[in-house]
Length: 394
Ligand code: HEM
Image 1 (cartoon, rainbow, N blue to C red):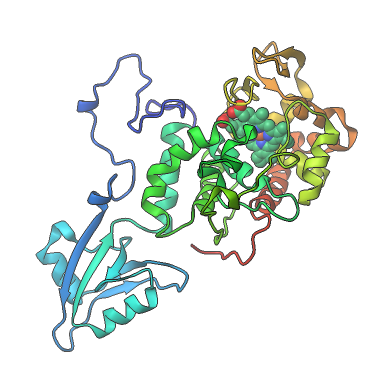
Image 2: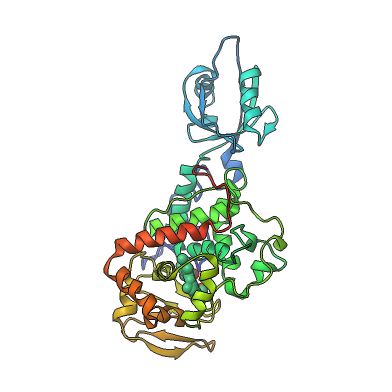
């Protein structure tokens, strides 16, 4: 990660890369690199194939069948009429990693699609290039690196899951639905306007064919954490999307924390969700990446000097730097380090002002491995709050 010659920040909404070199490079002289694997538009990605079997001839496609899926990913082209087709029509070549979307008018039902492949002599198939879990992870990594948007993707997943109150409010991507509810919560400011549009080109390809929005937000955060140098957190799948804003939670009160409060507030928010002091400190360490934005939360500035690096600097800085209180231009109280110009919220400072929290700040500042391990446990629990029957593979 870090600043490479070919990155732009998430504040710049365009999809094309912007070089940060002093000398501008004309877009027309840059190679057209697709943003999304398989092509940026549905037209580029989707293709049609007609295969006709003679008696006894094999189809020659190994597919990865899983009943929960809506598509059949091609594992290998093993010969038969598939290989003949590839020789005849190289521009519509069947490749491993492409997925079958439809067979003879049947879509969404992989059992029936497989049956058609076995039983029918002529197969009219619709396919999508590069439609697998591996391509999805690759596309998310590319997004995180090109747009330097890892931190806001982490915040999106946390706020989707963080409205759980012990009974309801599991991650269901309700925030993407306008009309009220989570979309309009002041605590979510910036997420509907910035984070969700950033994911839109990827969602357009993979949702709902492969993944729900809620699972996509979860996976995107985990890919971002890894891309920024953090641990690879395992994602499980099966979160259901809300289809109307009313299926989200109607009130933000008491569900998401306020940055201008003390230790007691953190416990009031996190204990009902099932987190103890150690988990609260471990989760708060995510503020090692990203920043506060005046126009979103009214707070201002990054927590650490390298806001795109997921390491334990946050805990070290909390303990070893000197923090003075200040008021932002929006009237919010916060703390600033004069040397680094980085900031802390009142809730961040609460972690060193409260002795029960502070012992974990010391532990995680001394030992990054132990932070990664505690963060991993607490973060998976957070992302799975209120979810049942999640599965290991997509
Ligand atoms: C402990 C209580 C917490 C409070 C009071 C809090 C508050 C905030 C605030 C005020 C912002 C700035 C939003 C903006 O202006 O753009 C923010 C950003 C952020 N929060 Fe938290 N947060 C808390 C916990 C968490 C947790 C548990 C996570 C994840 C595990 C997290 C991850 C982030 C990230 C990555 C950002 C940066 C987003 C960006 O750069 O756009 N926060 N948080």
